[in-house]
Image (cartoon, rainbow, N blue to C red; front, side):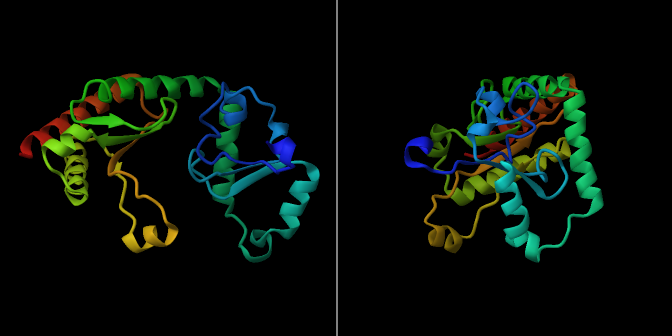
Length: 225
């Protein structure tokens, strides 16, 4: 379609760069597509790379235009050296240690094994490669307990508190104000627990954390009649 209708293809890799692909190069490597097929590849360096700012990759003409004409160039302050260095060193670490991607996928798989197939209460809506797992209450649980959206948010917060009390830190999706959603004409996402997986933990630690999360979910939901 890009070639037929002469579109420019802009690919946002904010949450895929550093995660997908054999060496973490993102969607194009994951799907075996030549990166040159995308006119512009953009992304944030504040998520996976725990730095700041972002990047724009493309042809020389596109990059020059972006550098000189973008509003960020004209109106924004320069990125702090600390954040720039953090992002740069993280990219270098991935380049020199591709086994980190393998370890990340093993950790993701280990957490999935502890939560999605074993829990009677929640299921994961994230892709299997995603290191950020979104755990949503199963429809039959919501209907049997007659839970409203507010009830679900309250229950999920109790689960977050319970896991924290047992040494595991997770969070949940926070609701966006209704007026914001109506203005943007978006359907709000379902209330969900948010479990972030990193290579900073061993597989054994990931499995232990998964057990703590699963037991916390079971404990809180069994209390709700």
